[in-house]
Image 1 (spheres, rainbow, N blue to C red):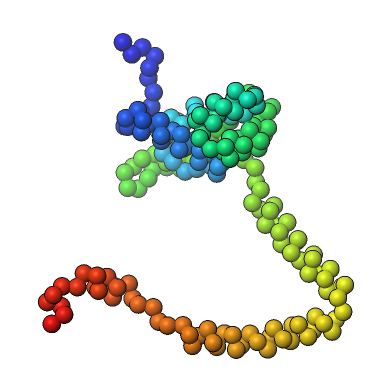
Image 2 (tube, rainbow, N blue to C red):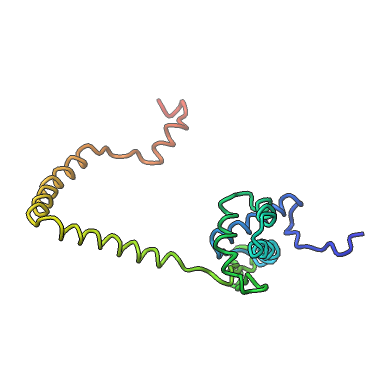
Length: 192
């Protein structure tokens, strides 16, 4: 008898079911937020919660268990070095499901499945890169004499229009997509 064996099967065989759940877990660890169906999010929630609780323990055995599920050393390192310490003060509730409504094609309930503590690093990196690029240029202007910089700028401007004109002349028009397909599927009667 199958007592206490209930799970969200997702309409798949066992191996497909496991692969789907692992794929969702990997994507949540990489992207920290994904858009998926409600049933898939609910099915993969248990595995992701388990992986984050392993990351909080941070032992060799926990790393090996996570490696068995995730299959990549980079993902295990990301999980244990960045995501695990973020949830060190939290006992449970590492993920959340936010409803988006129904999908137009098949009326499936769509959700955003994400970690509760998301690190916003993209905006900070972009600002830091812009500031870093502007500072060395200003420092170089101050250290080098003004005459040398003006001469280099004049030489670059002098050669730019010629380079653009030569690129325009050498460029050949591309074949159209349909024309290329016609040559592949040409019939004998077309050649007459």
